[in-house]
Image (cartoon, rainbow over all chains, first blue to last red; front, side, top):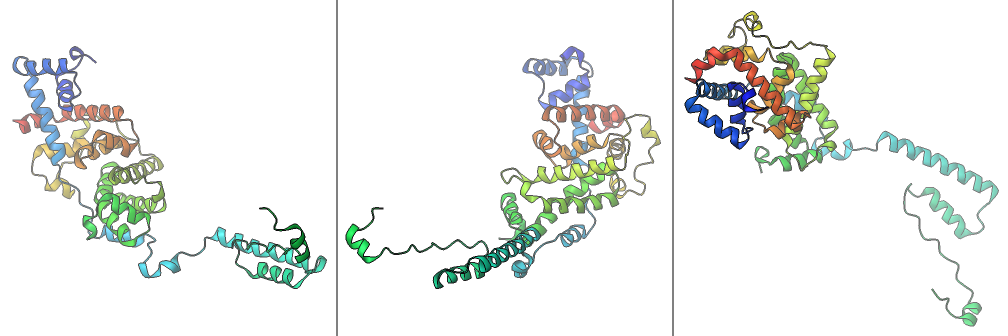
Length: 156
Length: 190
């Protein structure tokens, strides 16, 4: 939009917004002295802005903020640990994990009983250990003494 | 440190941690902004109260979406602005186009509305009546810009409207208001 196509009111608003290109802004400033109505348009634009800024602020009703805060599901500091329980999804997956583990144990117990006491203990630890706990390293069987004496230490 | 003096960034960190006192402070600090925007857009104090409650519940549920590097005000205003828009759309309230003659049909300013009654100047009373003739979105833009003191960029962030469009709409709204208020503004400005 060029200066010629704008009304004085639009020019005054654009001038106050700083949206006029430098050349048009200078021309408008010259108009303020010479063009009838330019100064009045500028002062009316300023007056409207003053009015908009000075409208009395609407105050919320007393107690509204407190009512809103009271309706939020906020945790009290002392009960934080009670409030933060496992999510329903996590609880469901945990139950599923136990059911799955139970099935495997039942199968192992009938089809492949523990071959040794240590294997039995490992099964027991796995069965009773917490879900998601890092797996313990499985101890490797030591090589017999005669093999270590004959072939030495195995290279890593 | 008293909660009132917390910076917005620190307040946001506390809210993100789920700190109850932080949330109470956030609600106290931003309820006026949300309520004012609600009254301006919905033209009902009761609805503004409802929408204020809805806004803070919504923010509490989705605080992870807040970018802590940005100021809180525009984010709160954005949540409030869109909540008001949803209500307007939900009730299918048609925004009247501005009509200077409609001002004559508006009940006299300073009636039962305490805000209007508190106004001493004729120009301010007329302005409040004229504002009611603008579409809700334009009222929100003017409110955020002049009452809340947000910059054009922050108004853009709050409303999701591009900066250029924000400037154009505010510009047109002002021109329209001036057309309606010309006589009063002439007296006010002199």
